[in-house]
Length: 295
Image 1 (spheres, rainbow, N blue to C red):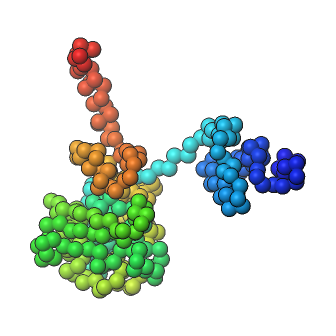
Image 2 (cartoon, helix red, strand yellow; image 1 turned 180 degrees about the horizontal axis):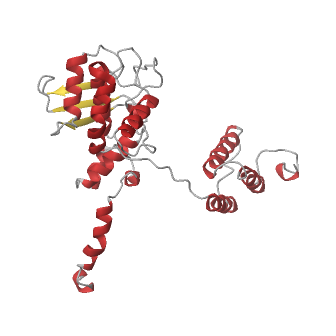
Image 3 (tube, helix red, strand yellow; image 1 turned 90 degrees about the vertical axis):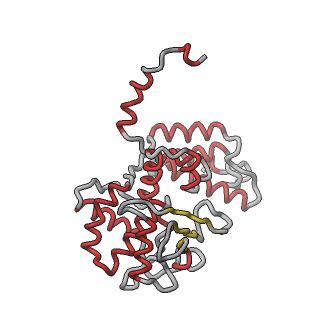
C-alpha cells in the first residue's frame, strides 16, 4: 500500500502513480471502457471530498490508458440494419403469428421506429406493466394530419429522448409513403382497427406493454423464418437502417442529422455504405482527367 497513500497516510488525493497502478490492475480483468468508468467514479469521489480533478493534466496516465486500449483492441459491436426490404420480408410472418389482434400494433411500432429514426427506448417501455406517463409514448403523442380518416402525415411527440435533456419534448414528422411499408398507413390502421384507449401507445391485447426484449425477439425470429441474417439484429437496428436508407436515397447529410435528432456528426457511424457504391469509387476517380481539372 506504500504507493497508494501520501506521506501523511491519506489515500486521497490519489497520485498519478496510484491511478496508473489502479488502471493497470483493472486491465487484467476488464475492458478499457470499464476502466474509464471506474476512473470517472474516482474523479467524482475526489470532487465530492473537496479535492481537485485527479485526472486533469495526467499525461502519463493518458498514455497508459491508450496503451491498454491498443493492447486490448477496440471491440466492434455488430448491429445489422433494418431496411424496407427487411420489413417487407418479415411482414407476412408477423401477421401470421400475431393475427388481427396484435399485428397492427407491432407493424405500426416497427414502421414508426424505422421512419422516425427512433431509438428502441423511445417507443418501448421499461417493463411489461411499467408505463410512465411523463416519459413514455402514449396514445396522446400521435396526431394525424389533416385527419385520421385521410392522413397525409403524422406527428409523434417524444416526451423523453437522449438528446432532450430538459424534457421539452421533440416532434417527429413522418409523411405518407408509397407501398406497404408506410408508417402513416400502419398507424392509421392501428388506430382504426384497435382503437387504443388513452394510455400507453403500444400494448398487446393481453395488456402487456411492448418492451425492448420483445421487439428484439420478434425481429430476430421473424428474420430467421424469412431466411434473413438475424444474429446481429438489435433494438438500434431500426435507427441504423433508417440512416443507411436515407443516405442511399440521396438525402443530404444535414437532413439525415435533423431526422435522426443527432446533436453531433456521430450519425455517420450508423450509415452502412453499400458495396456497389464502394466498387464504383475507383472507376469514378479514374474518370477525373488530372490535376488541371482542379485549377
